[in-house]
Amino acid sequence: EDQVTQSPEALRLQEGESSSLNCSYTVSGLRGLFWYRQDPGKGPEFLFTLYSAGEEKEKERLKATLTKKESFLHITAPKPEDSATYLCAVQAPVGNTGKLIFGQGTTLQVKP
Amino acid sequence: EAQVTQNPRYLITVTGKKLTVTCSQNMNHEYMSWYRQDPGLGLRQIYYSMNVEVTDKGDVPEGYKVSRKEKRNFPLILESPSPNQTSLYFCASSLGDRGYEQYFGPGTRLTVT
Image 1 (tube, rainbow over the protein chains, first blue to last red):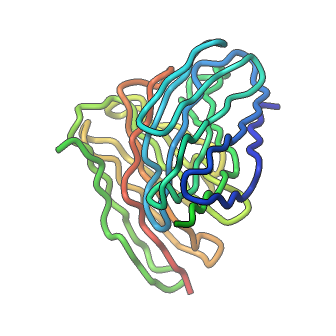
Image 2: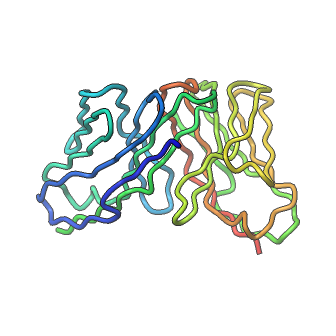
C-alpha cells in the first residue's frame, strides 16, 4: 500500500537553530514527491517537487532532498515566519487519478 | 494573479439541505481535484477531473457529486449533507495528472449540524 510518514509530528526550534524534517514513503513507482507549507486555516502552498533520487531543490532557508525511500526538508537558520505545518505528498502511478498521498505533516514552531 | 478560488469560505448548514461549494481556477489547468482535511486523517481526495466532462471518484466520494462543464470551474455538490461531512475542503488544480504540482484554493470550512 502506498504510504507517506512524516516525522517528527511537531518541532520547536529557536530562531537560527537549523534542523531537518523527514518524509518516508513507500510507493510503487514514484511520479513525484511534493513539499507544501500550510498555515492554519489556509490551503497548502506549494514549495518543491522532486522526481528522482539525488535531486535537491532550494528556496531561501529551505532545501529539499530525495533518496529512494525518503525526503528531507532542511531548514537553515529559521525565522519565526517559518512557523507552519509542512506537508509531504507523493504521487503514485497506479491508475490515472493524479491523487496526492499526503503525510500527516510536521508542525514547526520557531521561537524568537 | 494565478489562483484557485473557492466560495463560500465558511458555511454552517443543517442536515439534508443541499449545498454547492464553487471552485474556479484562472491558470487554464486541465486537472482539478477536491480534497477534504480532517484531524488525524490528513488530506484525502474526494473527486477529480482530468478535463471538461471527465470526472471520477477519489478515495472518499460517498455523499458528494461534482461536475466539470467548463475548464475553469469544478463545483462540489452535497445533495444531502450529514454531520460526518463537517470538514475543511480544498480544491486544487494542476497542468496535468502526472508529476505536476497541484495548486490549492484557500479552503472552505463546512459545518453540518
